[in-house]
Image (tube, rainbow, N blue to C red; front, side, top):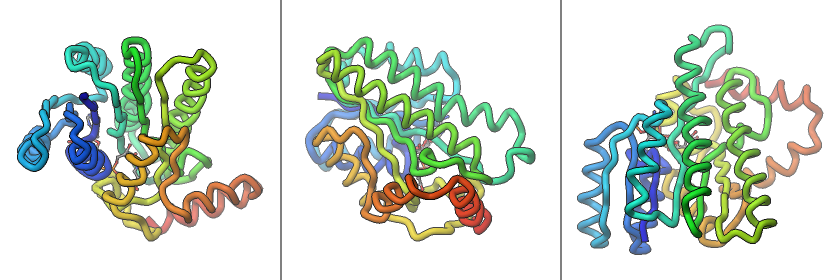
Length: 249
Ligand SMILES: NC(=O)c1ccc[n+]([C@@H]2O[C@H](COP(=O)([O-])OP(=O)(O)OC[C@H]3O[C@@H](n4cnc5c(N)ncnc54)[C@H](OP(=O)(O)O)[C@@H]3O)[C@@H](O)[C@H]2O)c1
């Protein structure tokens, strides 16, 4: 059985790949940096004897996402992890439009396209989309990124409900990590403002949630607690707290 993992060249995606390989799942690894993917292929093929297919793809280009789905059909993946994504810290006004649109294409359009095409083509299986805790709240200084993750969260949870109502053997699960130590901060142009968890631990919780069919996976007790209390906080308090945290970055 194959699993497709996007954003497998580093961070959470790479750790999910390692854990699935340990469960003897064959892999299709996607990202732009082919050297990292090839290294992971050698590591996982050697350690676990799994088949690993490397696909260097820029997912910010919509046609590439459609082509990727088409190319993956021959492997019939039963697990799809839409993990590739990035953030941009700073004011909405200061960020250039082209960069914002590249983020929307990677975090939203690519996830939408691959979720749509695999829901339509896979007879049975699981799709896990990686959103973020930031998707639960409007986040000043991370506004567009948080909005992309709100999209991923709302899309996935609603589709999962639709599929269950229709008694389809396909699940769409959503992983919502808090801060995780990966390349994310450097790419986003941010320093760490909150204590985070390791990518290994986040991936472990993600894979456990995947196998247990958790519709929304919140890695760590603190994140579950935060999510719970967020429901009761007035919007102004949410905004000022989020602003203070992002400003530290
Ligand atoms: N780290 C956190 O604190 C945190 C918290 C909540 C949610 N998340 C989410 O978790 C996911 C994984 O991020 P991470 O923390 O593991 O960060 P990361 O180490 O920077 O990994 C991001 C991955 O996405 C890939 N990627 C980015 N743009 C791409 C593109 N245009 N086409 C193909 N692949 C692309 C990167 O590969 P290449 O550069 O090789 O293309 C890399 O493999 C993201 O969706 C992120 O938003 C992270």
